Image 1: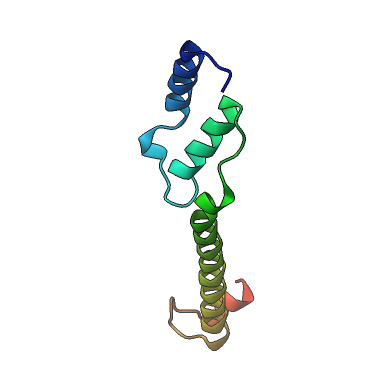
Image 2 (image 1 turned 60 degrees about the vertical axis):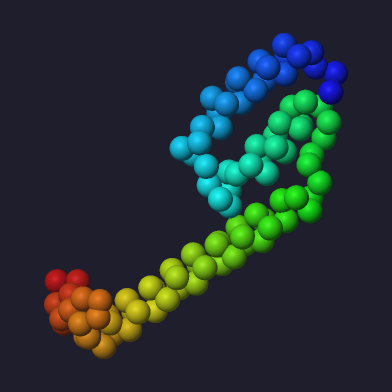
Length: 99
């Protein structure tokens, strides 16, 4: 980097306020993300893609699981609604007609 030691220290202080440990997220805001931002701000470019590939794979898996869960929840609700069943709640004819 072409930054002075003072500039690097100032950058780290500023980043420490933007990257508190309480906001750590294993998939979306982790040490790889911090390191990539730091390297960019130091002017040395991105970290190698292989470093963050596992986190990217985890994000894809997590996102897919969220959509799958939502789809399953929607199907269960529709099934209960149409059958008048009591899973996950009891529907009666007045509920279905909107009255």
